[in-house]
Image (tube, rainbow, N blue to C red; front, side, top):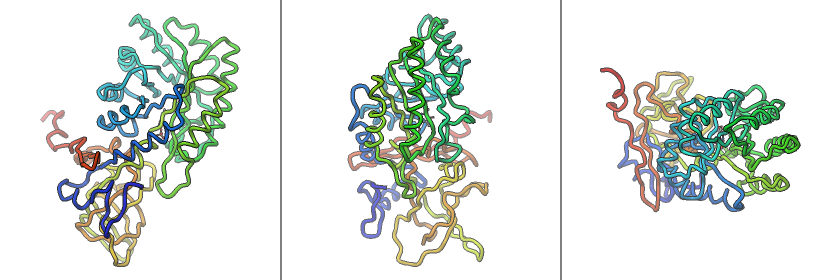
Length: 411
Ligand SMILES: Cc1ncc(COP(=O)(O)O)c(C=O)c1O
């Protein structure tokens, strides 16, 4: 990670010593770098034109302070629930820069989005289209829609984060899309404004996007022949980050290539990046509780677990684990595990480390799909979140208290 570096054998994050920070803050905690988030956004926006809209995908990290920061840098939002829309509005987002994706929007959620006059619904099924139309008719308003088309493109990523293939639940099958547009055109309270796709997450190359664009373009030609005119194409999110020194296409090249491939269409272009905005801007700081060694296996038992970071057990995701104090002693191989009572509770397997109990370690690249996936499993408080902004460490979410965890239960 760019914002992490050793200085005299001690790890600094955004120029501040993590040992010093952890003297004042109880581990485990998340901490983000404002500077890195701003840099990621400016890399995306460098070649943006007035016809491009960047809608940060709130699901990647929905902390309201981060949403405010991201909105202040010129981004709109992609939301997938009433809760995420509520957060975006609380963060002061302009609803006309919000798109609403997701396969299971309820009537209540549709009504909330219509009340807030969002830019458009990314529609994922025929029934959902009718539900939006009925709700808009009931509310005597009109709904802007884009149809999410599933381009059936294979993406090299974990199967749980591939979304653009026939067997995935997302979007409308390519061969059905024209028919759905024709039906949408006849509905009383629907305005068709776009077409969208999102093929998956942690994608490292441009090819699957270009393949998708090529088949979506064929569909747009058919739509035009049927007198269905669009004002935008939304190419989703999905660009990956380097967790384990993966080779990636740069954000600038990605944007240039997508814009070039779409110039002939003369449409506005929407992007929905999530992971690539915040993923490499956050770390989870944790303390080693116990070192457990045996002939067959060594364990570092740390105070972070799957309840703070679900990605390793959920996707087998790899995150670098780095000691805050560099050691000159020889390393051993450890599984780095948490205190949760599940064998799936691991943060890293077979890691070469030299740590003693009491040492601090950093789990890297956890800004996306980290804190948002945390839970109170084993009645563990969700951890605090901080940000380094202008060389200051600022609290942006307190850790849960035990009373907060049980407050909705009948005691
Ligand atoms: C519809 C949609 N848009 C955008 C994203 C963001 O993807 P990423 O975080 O990989 O950029 C997702 C993530 O799954 C998504 O489902």
